[in-house]
Length: 305
Image 1 (spheres, rainbow, N blue to C red):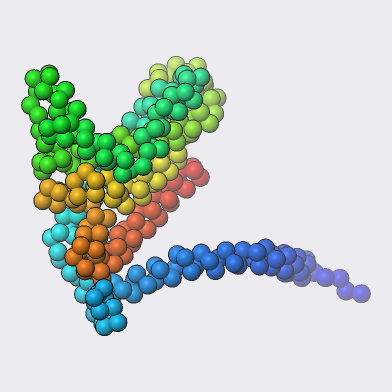
Image 2 (image 1 turned 90 degrees about the vertical axis):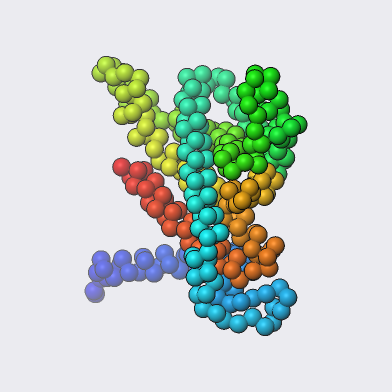
């Protein structure tokens, strides 16, 4: 009597494994269907609208216009300005939040017994809603009633309309965002630092390495995947920032603080250029997906290394 070969046995076991997975797939199917309806259908509809001249006034008379909305966006000075402002805002805020968060995390790593009490207070800006944060800072930076200018006046320093001048408006918005989200980055980096193995650092100290050398050659390579993850999370959030800009400057002065999210809002809901706004939204989504894939691959490569 012939016995089954190892190849046939492997095929049988693989088939049995697939059949055992059918019940799990049955449980997941409703969730996948709901997710597709909630996420995929609206996304495809937005992409479709970006190729039409859809209007709120006559929604049934929209026509297919091809890539005209995308060409209009790429050739429009307002779009290029918003793209530049968004790039600067994201680079400044994420960079400062990462650096300051790392400094706070390193300082707390040597004083872990105070970390819980510290973060319970330090995380308050992150818990506050962005609209409330914007309102508070709008009063603080008010040119005549604000606390900031009042203190500068007491010190004899010149006062300014921080949110009303082109040279300081974007910087002020960036600093408000840094104030709000640095605690979250510090918490993520601190969690990564306290989970690192101590043996490599102790071995480096035994070999005569200085604190800077230990940080540069031991701590930084180990914490790099966590830092890249924090940068990824904050970058995605910075690219869709709307609340703070809406409250503080409404994109002014002279569009100096108009991020892409506010650019989409202005053209889509104030100027009724809905198809153009959807085209810019699709361009923003593509940019986010490209950046996310690059940074995610860097993070996975660091974890493998």
